Image (cartoon, rainbow, N blue to C red; front, side):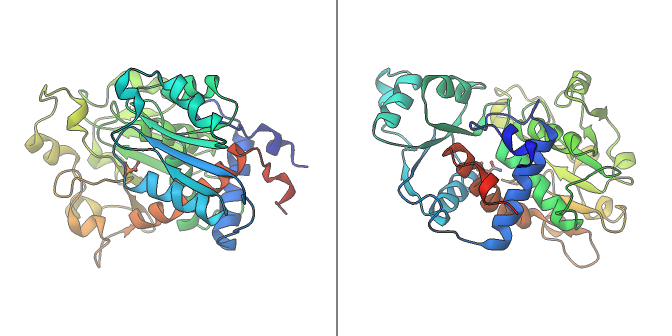
Length: 321
Ligand code: CP
């Protein structure tokens, strides 16, 4: 057995610190699911619960579809009406869900670290679907799979020589943290670009370079991942002016035309069209670089199939060639 397979954690809580071999093994498994399509018997008789305490379109839906494609039963516990509103702790909520026979809890919360608390409270698998400003590990993995597909690197997931540029509200972004972890583990050089208020220099501690000049960074990028400006996490403090932000950091058609041949445009969604990215760029209009925004969404399914399989306690080892 590939020793890297032993290092895939059952709970997928964060990518930072995860073994590069384990990341590649998970991505290889996702690529296998991508080719294979639905495998409706792998998780028959297993139950996956989605518990989202923050809004989601892509992540919640694709976790549910991924579980269904594996043959699992899915229960969605998201939205208002949970007994947490009566003072129940998250740990008690998680233990209660597990006591009903749930095998995997997929959890999104506004508080950084909340999935770790749940993982300590239960014996079933826990998957972090995004926690506060901390991490969004399956988003990082799906971004890596989408980039590997775009660059024909799904055999090796070796990103050495690639320049990955993340632009925007890095401080608020759990996607940025997971992306830095996965892209650097695979060998890419990662640059974080934005104004100091939302891309502070201290972010170099993540293992990336921080730059202010988007116009310089864009010319060497192999992939540009645009982030949404998360005004709702700024506490109404007016951290950035929309006019100044657009002038310095929007991916306009004019900027996109300066990207290298073969470079791709990415965005984890949801997008603020007309603010951080223009319609023509997001949609990959003729004459502009290829947009893989919807490929990123599609890659969420196989990545989440691989994550659910591990969290259910089913090693991918027996299935991988
Ligand atoms: N990218 C992402 O997490 O999107 P959702 O908030 O729609 O799940």
